[in-house]
Image 1: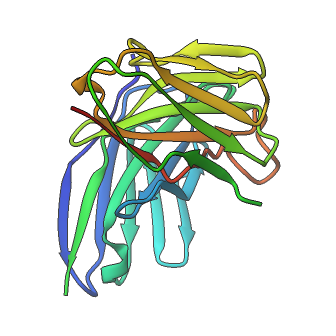
Image 2: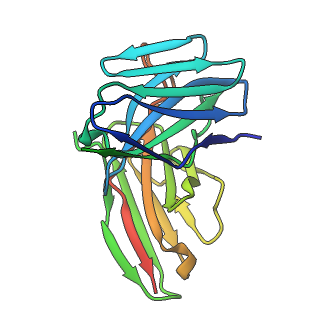
Amino acid sequence: GEDVEQSLFLSVREGDSSVINCTYTDSSSTYLYWYKQEPGAGLQLLTYIFSNMDMKQDQRLTVLLNKKDKHLSLRIADTQTGDSAIYFCAEIMNSGNTPLVFGKGTRLSVIA
Amino acid sequence: NAGVTQTPKFRVLKTGQSMTLLCAQDMNHEYMYWYRQDPGMGLRLIHYSVGEGTTAKGEVPDGYNVSRLKKQNFLLGLESAAPSQTSVYFCASSYSERLPGLGYEQYFGPGTRLTVT
């Protein structure tokens, strides 16, 4: 079955790097996503990675994918208070014509 | 473009009352989804639609019905609300095909906070 797991909480100091981890079970996942949810708002896509990639970098964000261990991570460099939010990992399988499967979300708290 | 909009933003219902949540998107997306979000549970898919006139059950469909009479609208109905349906409801939409350079991004609405007393 499909399952995406994340730790529920992470607390970091402003200026430090944050690393949010995710594990998934379905090896046929084609795309893996990171969404961000700010308080009182809907989800916004932060970044995604295709399953044939190991790494993707986008400004302060670095996504690492270890297909062998089915492990995905999101690193936020120089974490700011504005990065405080819930971060969701999600996967989609095969052709993509299926709904995303979301993890429960990791609440990132940034301490000034 | 407004993107994905949801109405209402907030609602309080008494047990047994009914209501309909409306989701609208102006991006010509084929796929639309309804999720509920509860503390510690993440997002759970209620129902989804892969095109006008079609719907399918998600992970937690019981107590809800949906309709997709027009491509741009996806309605979520609660026929007899229960306190267990107190939640924040999110609608999302996406293309059915992967666009060049993109994945299968889902675009989310701002949410509807529903309380059932």
